[in-house]
Image (cartoon, rainbow, N blue to C red; front, side):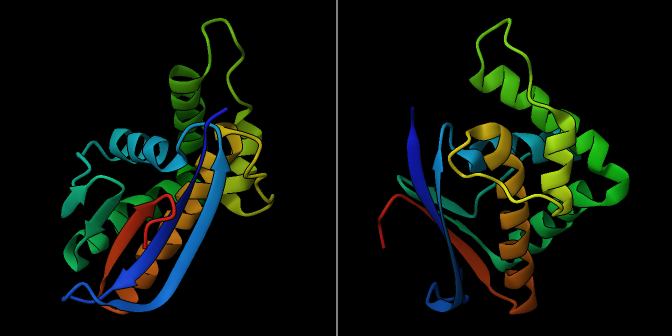
Length: 157
């Protein structure tokens, strides 16, 4: 089974680190990749990085504001059922073999609502909604400090 690590780091306009760093380790498919699919599908707008290279991507302060709004909308109580269904469908299409049952949308909804802690070793059915919450938290922090966000995959610093 695939596994990996991901770090969100707040940065200023010059790319220097600001206080604010969140790290996650996961098993299964990269949950951020699946979150990007979900947010793109639900918002109807393409995901755009400010800059991207192998193992690292940057979001400017402007992109953080836009993506914070998009991710916030997916986590609203009124949209949670739709978001849960989209996550279940994308996880099933991207990670499961045909004929396997899709993930339980009620478990996904509980993780999205914060009523249940995700098991980061359980695979994408739990890591994807947890990563959506984690991304929203990082984007919100970036907006509050008027900074950007650097995402690093693996152990690169």
